[in-house]
Amino acid sequence: MRKFIFLTGFLIIVTCLNAQDTADYHRVYQSYEVDSLPAFPYGNDSLYAYLRSGLKDINPSECLGTMMVSFVVEIDGSVTEARIVRSVCPLADKRLLEVVYEMPTWKPAMFKGRKVKSQVNIPVKVYFSPPPENKQ
Image (tube, rainbow, N blue to C red; front, side, top):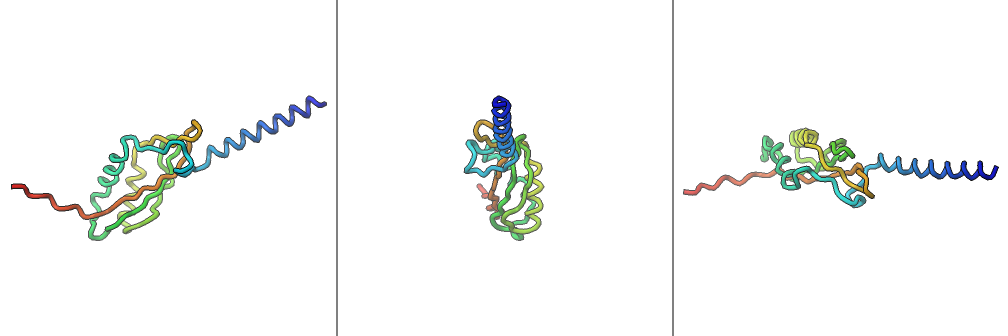
């Protein structure tokens, strides 16, 4: 009888610990909680170049300022739950969300040696480009 009670207690503890680990699997981690941040596959400079190229059709005279986009990088590197946190105009918001969902697969964040979901927040500036210089 004692063996039965011991085995039952042991199985309950193992099940609870396993359930707790599974709950963390579905959690979205913030940048300060992970061991390594999610990464755009070609580096940060390429990320900003990619975002700028996607917004090149936006008229800065109508939409000028700094936008903020937020999204989740899943454990497979895909981007989900994108939303505009700070807007400059509806047209730029719509285009930026399209560009974010078209991004290549990211390298996911790591926490305790496991890939985890993580929140990413990126500021994006919409500004006037300086006119090209005429060198003669």
